[in-house]
Amino acid sequence: MKERITFIHPVGGEHDPKSFDIQPKGMLGPTINTMREDRFTIPMDEIPAKIAEVLRQFRSLQVRWASPIQQNAISPFSSRISPGLHVSYTPAKQADIDPSKLCTLLKAFGPVDCESAEAFTEYRQKSSEMTTGGYFYQHVESLDDFIAFSSAKFCTEADPECQARVRGLDIAASLDITYDAKEGTAKLTGFWPLRNQPLVALSADKRRTEVGIMGLDEPPNMKKHELGASGTLTVLKEQTKPSPVFFAFPARHRESHASFSARFVTPTGLHPTMQLEFDSNKPPSDAGSCGMYAYLTLPRTIFADRYQLADDLFLASKNLTAAPYTSLPVDLEAPEYTTSVWGSTVLLQLAPPEKRTHQDAWTAEIPLHLRYLKPSKTGTENIEVPFPAVFWACEPVKSVDFTKSPFDRTHLGYDDLFEDGTVFWHVQPHGLDGSGDMNSRLMSGISVPVLNDSVADWVGIGTTAAISIGFAWVLWKLLSAFMQSAGKNNASSTTVSGSSVKKDGKRKKQ
Image (cartoon, rainbow, N blue to C red; front, top):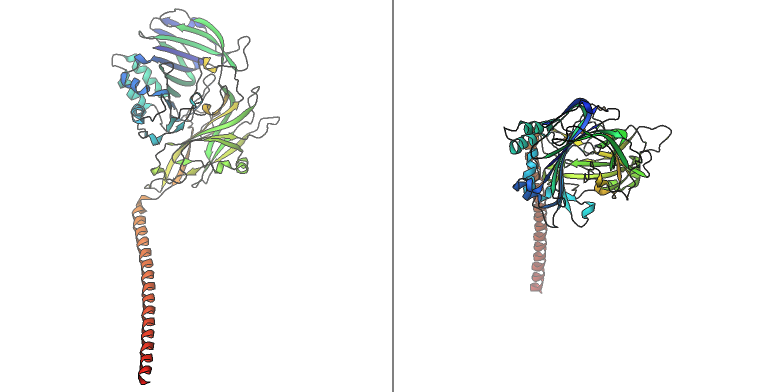
């Protein structure tokens, strides 16, 4: 097992390596404003047997969680997904996957509704165009259940360092668990947001631990598609002094220095409109040809109508250009409580106004539709929809291998919908109050009108009564028509019989 701990601080946050206290047990440094990434790379022979058995079903597996709380980030950790738990996989063979075993592992994050194959939507990676995988999403508010599971499963009471590391996830911005059959390894990566935190890293007997403390920099001959970093690198238990580093690396994900917020336009009704508010229409500088996109992750309570989004004139009125992708299947009529699939994802191309001398604020509107929900005691049900991931996608740099970056992040859902080499400039989300406060939620709330439980029984009784009365009325009408028809037939028969008798009488007289 290998461990890599990376601290990335903003430009100007340089530190004196002499202030580091490096001991066999670990390293201690000052408290600085920095992001932190912890990554464990675990070979298959070190993974518990039951977990390894599940992983062998897949060519690749990605389990990602992102916090619903506003988190500040800087490059190279600027890539984003919508808040919640995201699961995507490509099977090892083109065969049906039994999701129950995978779902058993996902229960570590809490109650997750993923038992049936119908809960997953179709998912296809660019590298596996002939193999269709699955995608699943569910809102998970925090990592509390995962922390409790991991602490009990992987830590012992005699290992306080393990317990402390696991508990530290309660303030993490995101968590990635990925598996790649080609590499034969699983990776667990935690990200902590930009904040004041101590430079602390502990060593362990059974793994190699690298600690990097760096800030963005510009090494000589750095290319446009690259980012640079400088700082120190220390291998715990092997070095007593940090070594200087200064290097450039290709960057697939970058900051656009713009921001947005999302809310539902009121009144909402059953066909709400999500409004995205941007503080800038300025595309990334020197990034070539770019388009702006929003990638929505919509739970099963709400959906977008792909037929409505095919109308170019309608899209233009909402500052939208096109809807290149909608996941399948999406039932446009079924209520939420009969829908088995988790929900849907939608990729929308936005149409920012042309850039003038100064950057301008602007909005885009996304029409959505609510499903009928189960009755409640109050007659309303509150739901939340995660903020979309918003970014500029710029023309591919086809001659560059972005996987060589030590911070590369792939298979996020939206990146597989673009050509290889596409560079993503991410727009930072701001919470519901429009600020960047750490307490701001990256969720848009909406109150949905539903049937009131207190009148639900009466509605059932009334419906039954109405149907019964209607059936009785139809039956009475049919019976009346039958009786009238029978009466006319009898009268006709009597007239015919009387006429025959009169004719017979005349014949006898003759």
